Image 1 (cartoon, rainbow, N blue to C red):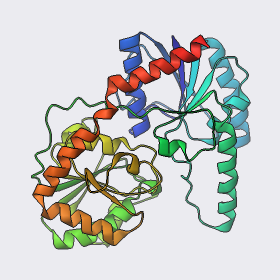
Image 2: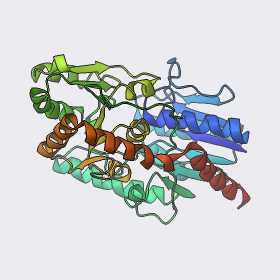
Image 3: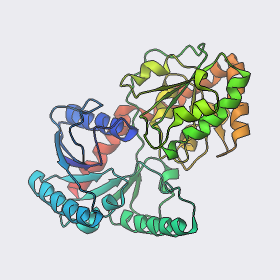
Image 4: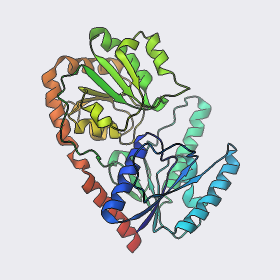
Length: 363
């Protein structure tokens, strides 16, 4: 079977790229599929995650003129699809132009959409931008219904969309865990790029209060820095730079989970955060805001972690302090965390994808 994935960039350090590498590698190695990937503006940057050498990559270099971009994007996509002749096309890019692909491209090849974002991922709050965002929501909803299938990562994520073509397939847990955190280190871990939606600014405000009570604990934040959002400067302003470490993304993040005792997430929106699933696989109890919509699909409040009302800073501080101070609670929640992520087993999730692809081709 020949599959074509359409995404923004495969050479970044994010969760979408991690999942794409895991799934495409598995489809080639276990099912002998042929995989092609079309990216945009990838440039000369090397792949961060390991992709099977049999995967064929194609890149569309888009300019700054948006109107011209759309025409160019349409033209080159059409050319690549004709060249590759895939049995199925999978779009895993949340940009508006990618939602538009069923309207842009003339092809008999079935096209499905794989949603790795929340519908409510816009954050401009003025009246003008509120209207623009509402129009974007409506347009995305319409386009979502034009794909053969709209694949969401959870029922909660699917419920954001008014579609009748919805299918739920979770992200797979790629890590085969053989050892776990002993939960004894005085270290808290967060894994997030430096962007508004990941809410690192909210985390630093929380950490300011927590570190005053527990100055011997360290917060490690792994993520790609941003020129626009200077969170290290905010840490200095809050006078927490000595208890906060900003670290670049690493390929062996699983080794970092094993040296931490608690995982935290303060995102403003998430689809299905792999970070939570990965951290729990190593026995980490988590504290996360109940943002739309991902964390609530993974964290069972008071069981394998704490799910905090979105934006309730005081409650977040309270629960984080509780986990810091109660090692027995960490151990209890960590054990529940390990059990709760068994359903994301790689083989099981990939069999669901195989079944979907085969049903599409047969029909």
